[in-house]
Image (tube, rainbow, N blue to C red; front, side):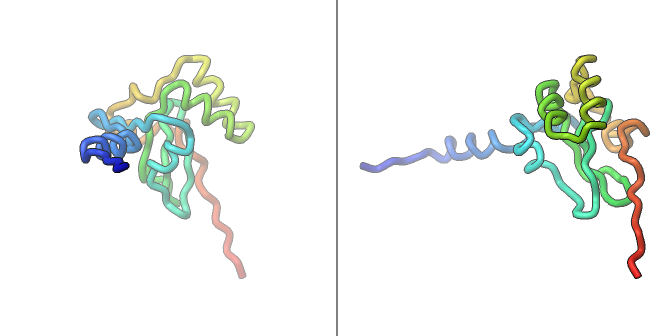
Length: 127
């Protein structure tokens, strides 16, 4: 018995796994694994969920490398795996109904407010 899958089906399955881009909004449906696999990372950088509901990947100089606009359920899932300080902040986002998919200005996405940026990374010199 032969099983075949059309090229259209394969394309549709592949597209389902990719992040959806609406204008400047980068939304990846699914859980934390899907979000992280779609996010470009800097090996010396940091990831932070902003007060606007946007998960950003920063390089070591705190420039935005990539971002994903999170829906309220994703924000809640993110807070469940985060540190205590992030849980308090993210819980406020969930309670206030923040939806990162509403942030579409490229300037807001790449230049977040100070509250949405991580603290500067501290490097120590080894002797």
